Length: 234
Image (cartoon, rainbow, N blue to C red):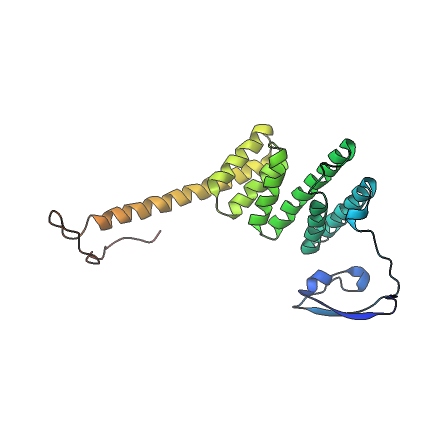
């Protein structure tokens, strides 16, 4: 079938996903945007499964570079999709020639790191942490993955895990200012959490120490504690 001349209405939500200077939509904002598309020419591209190894690597590199271009222009969701496509395409590389296998692994690793970076910008800390873990499975000392996982842990309020990853980064690079600043932030947050937990525990102990003492073999009455006075909220 010849698809030339076909038209379609494309709805983009949110409109910012269609922000493209070449379309005259550089400042697109709003809940949605409707575009009418007309197909002038069509050539079916090869599916990744039908490409030889060199073609697949070239395709993956081009997708990664496009993702990086989108990232720099602030089109985060579209950049993320480019990185995910490459990661999926190179999820299995055991049957590749050794030289190409190493190139594929390096390409996949770079896309996982970029996926973590974009996810952090989107405040999707779970996705960012998962991407970092995928890198660290094969490269346990990867400084970028450790640092970005630490940022994810901070976002998830896992302060102790954040502190641990920051220390691992600093062990490799004692002058890493970003890691040191992140470590300081996580330690301050953990200190505050400890303070809240200590206050909560103290209040619980005070509550348990009030009310009548039950006779041997009997339970304390429920809901008969007196209201405490003078306790401030943390």
